[in-house]
Image 1 (cartoon, rainbow, N blue to C red):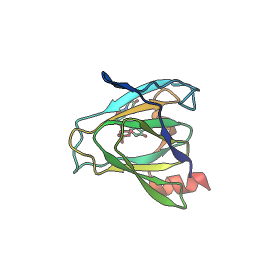
Image 2 (cartoon, helix red, strand yellow):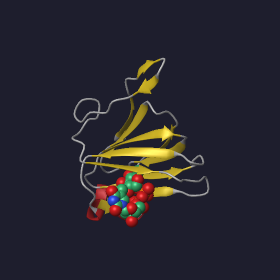
Image 3 (cartoon, rainbow, N blue to C red):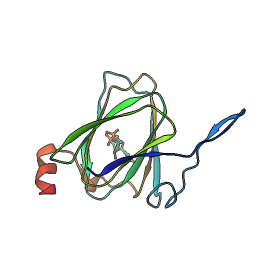
Image 4 (cartoon, rainbow, N blue to C red):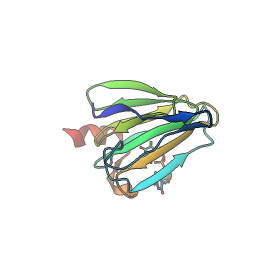
Length: 131
Ligand code: T46
């Protein structure tokens, strides 16, 4: 399975907490793009695609959601519910996002600029692609 959970170092004191994300240091690629997802709700699912080349780190800055991760052979689920844990997902991994808490906010760091051509949005096509 081409994913892992990364514990980010937290700088905390009586003023609050801070996490720093740096390309090729605690993020295992050059960061080319940052996007965020907000205004989510439990009834709605997202994802349902894979990437041919993209690597990403996903952080639940606020709230929680569940990721389903599938490499074509195995399917695992991961909860994201802490702002100091990053979910790294490498290429060729099918992902689905569900069970969003109301107002969950995800921040995503990506290794490439947006390119719809490298998405695989059909599960059978994904299975054919990874063979
Ligand atoms: C992923 C999960 C975690 C853009 O125009 N630029 C962008 O950088 C992105 C990410 C999306 N878009 C457009 C494409 C769609 O018209 O925004 C719309 C919603 O994107 P999508 O349906 O792909 O959103 P999610 O939440 O299903 O998936 C997103 C990322 O696309 C995907 O790479 O891994 O978040």
